[in-house]
Image (cartoon, rainbow, N blue to C red; front, side, top):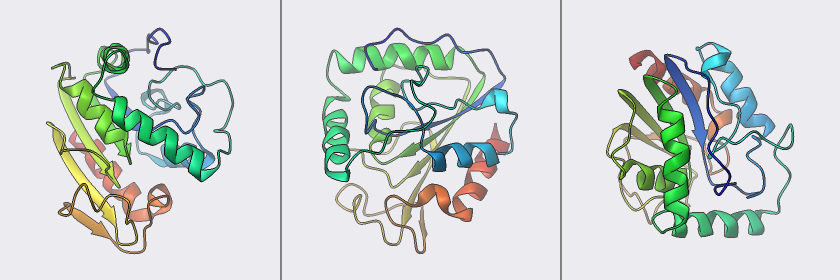
Length: 194
């Protein structure tokens, strides 16, 4: 998907996107949980992109079920390639297309999505207003943008990356962020800043 041509998104004042690694690198479809989460955000539907990065039109209505070991391997591959050409160069093109479509942008990263976001931010391209909500962040560093790093008390995946986060939410594991009401409140709070 990363090597597909960038999508020309409709222009809106504000956009909100989810950004995680692609467990299925052939499709940007969101899971049912991810779709429900976006549905609940306090912005008009036209401000929401119902696809994962690189935001190419999904092939399926819902993300395919991928075995956890295979999904983890694919996410690790994207983490490692995020800063390398040609992956990074193509990722930047998709990022530029997204940025051109709005004035303000909330990026909700999940797991290694933050590493890929960091790679495209290093290009210097960004919207006028950028907020990042990093859930269970797996990245080499914090983003160079206004952000909130959130870890679930039962999320042990990110510990090697960020021992200090901005907020620890009880009873959340690495796969559970978007089902917790606190995360919805945080996302809607960041949308108000836009």
